[in-house]
Figure 1: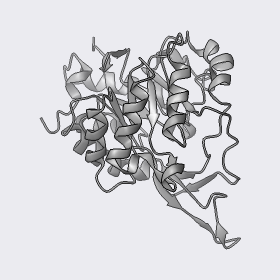
Figure 2: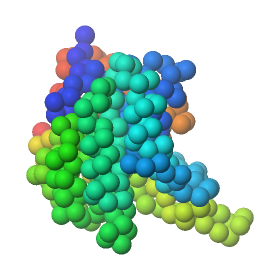
Figure 3: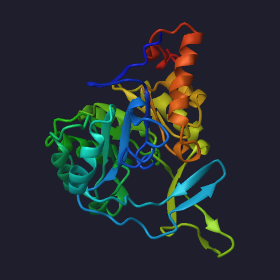
Length: 303
């Protein structure tokens, strides 16, 4: 038997396979395909303090080996999440990790404070790829000092572990990772989407209503693996690796690069059963190599 349990700070997951925010709804949308309790964790759809309608359509555009999305954090707001969604998912049998976002540091803190102490929440994923309205739209995660300040302030209002989701749209992702670690981040998740755009040659106009969006899918995997490799050797906290995972082989590659767990995003759209296939594939890979603990895979490519 292979021990598939992994730890993200103080959180213990039944296995290293999780599903990414924005691709799995609030945890029940894939229940017709399999029991979500079989997952290591569910990172919920992004939550803001007040409801958001999101960006104008079109919001999705298929690209070679990926998609561009410009959803714009459409969500019902934190109060509706706590009242309407959390009661339905808190007993799924897996770790529930809400993804939180904000346009100001104060909004991040409001969301985190509202979720603090709520039954069924294992941790918070802090999305620092959001535009900071007080800094002219610059993403919180694009500057180590600004990113660190978000985590410093959120830490003051919650006892929940913080998993910080890093943006790849930076010059030095290692500097951002180290900055949030110093302010108390319990784990990191990387990468978020790469900034991109497309033009519809039929209309001669940008394909997305918001012009630019986030690129995800297999096309971004080499960038994601490279960043996990770099960050994992620079910090002392666990990493959830993501970006283009489309098979169990991809997941193993991320773990060898330094990830403690993996997160499947766009792959869920193309293969609704992919998370279960990845869990089974990782276990089989370990068994065939007489690896008793899946944690032995983490960073073994550079150790």
